[in-house]
Length: 182
Image 1 (cartoon, rainbow, N blue to C red):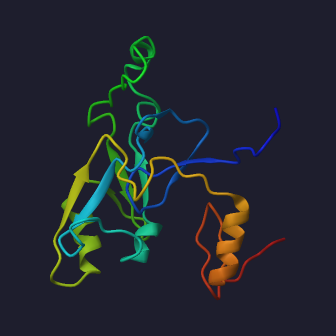
Image 2: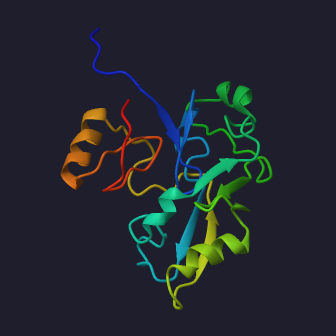
């Protein structure tokens, strides 16, 4: 057997288009990483085929930091032992909503529950007067394409070169920022 690569880091994104959280380990099932993109904001201004507000429409969303209130309960399904004994193809269940509650820290440092109308108001304010936002919750990741993404370090470097930015998995570096590499 030959080595084709190694996992440098694991990330989960509790809220679609907001910052992710680095994990030491992840439970991965049929629908992807447990707790990944559990929440998303639906926008009345988005196309019907893809109704979500994302960082493409509102770049600042990428600076919001969601966190599970109970990280230990959000690590794996509550019935994992039972599910492991079931026939292949049987899905484990998600924890109760209260166990998977998410708080979101805005770029200002202010914290909100993901379902707090004030958070939706803050996100909607940047969109002008027309669109209405609603919160969606799903036990399957609300991904654009596939439930698992593999992104190589080389691809990240290439993307950074193409857009003229240094990409870093832990922070956002914008054009013109001074970077201390010492």
